Image (cartoon, rainbow, N blue to C red; front, side, top):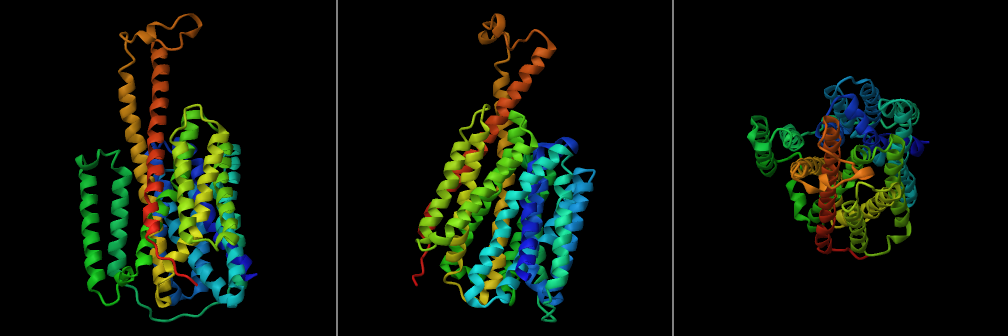
Length: 487
């Protein structure tokens, strides 16, 4: 029952990682937001999780694991309900931040309790069942959420989390009894606050840079200065403090340092397609939410396949598995970068599934090689940094991809408008039934403008997917530098 409860808690959090993505286009229209503004719903949730995750150990030591799980599930469920009731973009982003902050301790604490509840010989089997929560959540959430948002509206993707949260809360209250506390525990508040300020300022700069014309904006300049100052204070404090928030001595381990670099890129690639595909599919091709949910669910099915493959493939060299996983992501990104405006549902489905398969193949060997040579005494702290870097990579790359797509779309539209001229012979050569475009009326001009906007938007997304593919292949040389520990 402990294992079932904690698997449910983990699945509860894993659902929210992808569930909002399926309804991003509907949220965008309902809240009158632009593409870069609605992306804040995803990125700020990831950032809140990244900032709050390293506090998990301190919170559990001070208030007990049970207390943090109970209040974490309560806060997470209430924040999910508030997301569904939000009436403005600002309110929705605020509640998504709270959702990420309350949800951050759930997965690491659940994992720790599962490990402590089973003897060593049964831990592998228990973790296999526990891992199903992480994998099944992103499969079910977008599929069910897509149908609910199409039948009702986008708010139901958040409302559907509430009953799951109540079931998980009942299980935690009844079956989780770990009330042990370490009493007065240490938290380096200077390091925590400066790191939080750096991440938040840098993320806001990336999210709003394209909209505010980058460094021509005083707000962007202020965010850049604040991020630089906070990063300097954080690094200087971490090097000189006796007990820093993040211990820089961990970086002396070669495998761990390489693992952080690789997991940063892994985070960059993990959720970017699930953020780019929904607005692309609806904005360019007019797909309904239910089909978009199936596409995002296909990514989860691919991840599930990669996860099951690891049950027997773990005897292979982990470097080979890592290269295979990143190559799968690269091939998927390369294929997406060659979509046309007439892309098919099957084409999007199999590329999403392949990208998800790459995620499933990468995760287990990446975790193994990162911690293979690290002193066991530093595992808790090193794991917190590991997840922090992964989440930070996700939020940064989503923002960069959205900015690249929008910038490319604007440039492409400007280039295409040059052709909407009476001097363009192609327009005058259309005759009879094939006279599709013309400059004869306001309505015809509006139709031509819409089509040019659609084509320009497609070019922008294709450039973002090309960046995704290049990043996937570029990390492979780092994998070859990893040292494998032979048993």
